[in-house]
Amino acid sequence: MYKAIRKNPSAAQAADKILTALRDIPVSALSDNMHRNIGSVGLHPYQRPGKKTMAGTAVTVRSRGGDNLTYLRALEFCRPGDVLVVDAGGDLNNAVVGGILSFYAAHIGVVGLVVDGAIRDVAEIRDRDFPVYARGVTHRGPYKDGPGEINVSVSVGGMVVNPGDIVVGDQDGLLAIPQDDAEHVIEKALAVLEAEAETMQAMKEGRWSRAFIDALEARCNN
Image 1: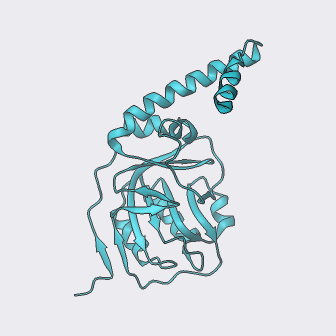
Image 2: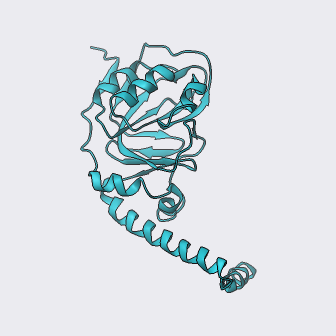
């Protein structure tokens, strides 16, 4: 029998202490410790800018472009603290999510939406703190026919997200971190932030050494 939506259970959620730590770390500091080649490209934040980093456990959706039947069903798989990640194939013809459905996601405790596709009601979304990332915007509403899949590996903005990955986002963009790697990445990112703070202090005090530029230039000339 044909099934409009294939459904899998949601993965175990990341530990609260991990998510709490990530919310105080800029995505750029995390990215610097993941080879600088992992993360989404072409997805933009539409919420009101804030200082905290979005961090939550991924519940994933793969849907036909411009169709939100799978999104509607996937809300039942979301728990407080999850990020709902929708691979809509980058389609911009019809919006998958708008003001009402993003409001409902926030209401049930979802901590962010990521849509590789279109959204609408942007003025409404920009007036809220609730994180919504998308590839683009259109006024045209969604279809509700399927097909789709819930909790499968997806790709959003060229970034693979597996169910249970930790998805982080700020005004710079999005990153997916496997739960097993999270503590190591956090430790490294905090070291980066400490080093950056020392550099800033050195700049203020006029003792910032620029000798490293000579080494970089010499490397390029070889």
